[in-house]
Length: 302
Ligand code: SF4
Ligand code: SF4
Image (tube, rainbow, N blue to C red; front, side):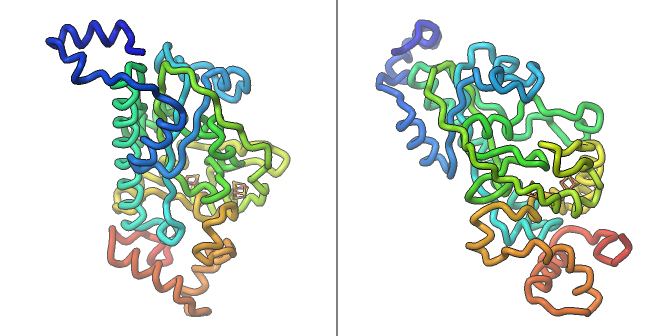
């Protein structure tokens, strides 16, 4: 049903009611179909009560802090391809990051437009809602967590390293959220534990941003150290870092891309010293050499 708000707004616009607002029933199925048509590979629904019920975040980061009328959060996701993630830090990785961000932001805007056209108020929250990584140095939190929204929408689970772990792609997914005033049933949240607490993410992190052990549900994270590392890589056009994403053993994509041994990332230095020869290492070196600027670690200085 078309809300009186929109009917009034369209009347003000000069009788565009018939042009802009479409009658028709919006369902979860029709939203999923539209989201997929717009490029989302994953779609999940989270009623806003889940933020309060689970209490994982301060209230400041509940959906109603962004928009008080929100009833449901629709989360869209796309995977990033493991072989490109494995080349991090690389310019190719940076391009993939940019493309997936732009795709998600456009899909979320268009999905909000689809809902609004049908008379159900909706807004999209942009992917990187913090503005710039420099700002995170003073204010280490974005306005809204797409990771926790995806967790509540049943797309995966938050792992020890604070990323969303999914069965299909592990933490190698990018996410965005749409808030709507439409009440929709939530998707089931997975009960199965995905994080193995291997702590490889802690071991590989070049900024030593994670502290804690396997007994902790989530690592303590030094976000400033992570941001500083990201800034260094960005100056070389080779951000994001994402080492904690590439090393994670969770995800069926590891089988698909025939890369099931995360220890390979720890042995790359030895290969560069000529102790082993591996075509995969050669491909990473190629990608890094012909994109972005050299880093100290490329010269073995770090
Ligand atoms: S690398 Fe290991 S500890 Fe870290 S998130 Fe993945 S499974 Fe969990
Ligand atoms: S992105 Fe890099 S610096 Fe940041 S936590 Fe992950 S591994 Fe550490």
